[in-house]
Image (cartoon, rainbow, N blue to C red; front, top):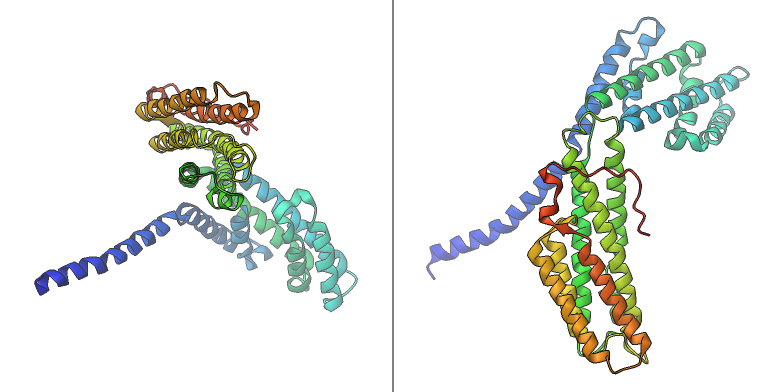
Amino acid sequence: MPSSTVATHGGAQASAPAAARSARFRARVRRLPWAPALTTAGAGAIAFWVGAVFPGPAGEFPYYAPLGAVVAMSTTVMGSVRKTVQSIVSIWLGSMIALAIGAVSTPSPVTVALVIGLGTIAGSWSWLDDMGHWVPTAGLFVLIIGTDDPVAFVSAFGGLTLIGAAIGVAMTVLFPQLPLGPTERAIRDVRTEVLVQLRRLAHALQGDGPPTETQWRDYVAQLDPAVQRMRAARQLVLDASRVNRRREHHRYRLERELEQAAALERVCFLIEELTQVLEEEERAGNDHVGLGPELRPHTAQALLALADLVQSGDGRTADPGAKADAQDALAALVDQIHDVRVGEPSYDELFTAGSIVTTIRRCIETPHPVSASPASGQSARIEERPSDHR
């Protein structure tokens, strides 16, 4: 091979990892919370300017206004309002504790300990949620920084924080977030885990005999972590869509994602049931197995066809051809069950095979054909209650 060709080939091989690293870096950069960061930064800048021009002693503490803006910022409008109220109540509660202790004693290790201790107890009030940590923090600010004129300091601290929080709420209303991207990624991750699990199950059934208990542990994927992340992302985007002026503009995409998440969650639940049945009934060492050597290959083919069906769509819809192939593979499994078990009286074995068939059929019927998509203008209603299939 000419040296120039070798050099070119080597350069191409060296550039491939660099290109992959560059692509991963760009993907990470795109996933950074740019919109919330810009909105929060803008709210903080406006709040600082307002605090700086505020008349009276409060103008000496302009930095408390952007503090309130940062505390109030949230992905959802209602969340922003709730955090504002909780933070202001926490600040005033801590301030009152510090004023009461400061009225009878000067700042010292003992008074600091008292403010922190009482503030921590008061901050544990469940209604304050994660804003409760502001109770001892505000108390320390008032006790240590506001010793000269505690009442004026508390007024400036609480007042400017409230003004900044109001600016934060206003920015959230004007520039609301609708985190559709994280929901899409969470749905994609769940679909990937479903594909991995189905193909692992199929591989487990393609051996010469049923897997052992130890081997089954290697074949079982953990769907629950990905499903929990998808549920959290679904709930977040659902909460963010309330009192959100961007909701109508993104209505179809929002409805599609919510339907995808609901359909995939149902499929995950069914696959967990299927996995449990296979792991318990088709295990080496059992006196009777649920499938046996005659049915394991056909079951594996049905699972692979189901995986192709899941891969062909978005969880909510599916390719009609892939759905027909999955139905054919399931029909072949049903025919084989009839041929193998028709002369055998074992109810347990018939029950296990029938349960597997029923579960696969329910998975196949979950997504609708692509033609059933509401893109034609018939929008599905957004469900604001959790799925009830469990």
